[in-house]
Length: 282
Image (cartoon, rainbow, N blue to C red):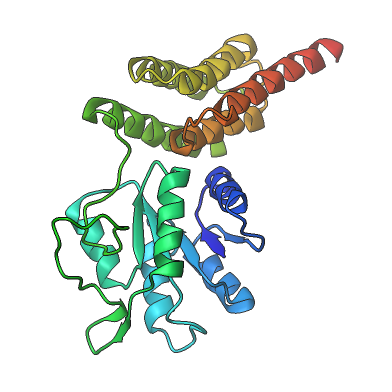
C-alpha cells in the first residue's frame, strides 16, 4: 500500500495503524509528484492520499492515477484523507474517482472500515468520457446497516461536540503555521522565538478548553523548552519541530486506551530533559 502525505509524522501514524491491521508492505511519499514515482515503481494494491499537498495535491494525484496514459493501474482503490468536510471537497474527490473519503482526525476504526469496503465490497469500475472511477450509484435504503461506500454518503466523523471539533481543527492549523515559521527560524531572533512561544501558549489554552490532556501536555512541553532556552542561541530548532509534529499527530491519534498518546507526550518531555542535561554538561 502507498501512503502519500506531506507530514512525515502523520504518514508514520497511518502506517502504524495499517501494520496493526496486518499490512506488511508499505511505501511512502510526501506529495503527488513523489507519489507518482512510488506508484510506478511499486504498483501498490491500495493508495491513501492526503488532499492538501504541494506541488501536486491529492486531487491531481488521484486524477493522474485514473486518467493518465502512464498510470500502470487506473483501477487501484484510492482513499483520500482530508480535514475538509465541506460539500465542495466531497464533490471534488468524487469527481476524480476517489473510492473512499476519511475526514480527519484519522482513527483506526475509520481506516479499517474503508479497508473492508474497498477490499471486500469493491464497486464496479466505470470508464466513460466524463468519469473514470468506482461506480457512485447505490439504491437508497433507510434501513441500510452496512459500510458506507459511496463518496456522497454521510461522512463518518468522531462523536465530539462541534465546539471541541472546531478547537481541535484550529490547533492543527496553528501547528502547521508554526511549522512554517520553524523551518526558517533563527533561534537568536527574539521576535520570531517570542511569536512561537506566545502562539504555543495559546495552543495549550485551546487544548485545555477542548479537554485534551495530551495536546495540552505537548504544547506545555514546548512552552517550557522555549522559556528555558529563550533567544540565547542554545535552542535546537529540531526540538521545536518535533513538538509541532507531535501536536499535529496527536490531533489524528485516537485515545483508545493503549497509551499511544501518553507515550508521544512522554517522549517529548524526555527529549527536553535530555537537551537540558546536554547543555549543563557542555
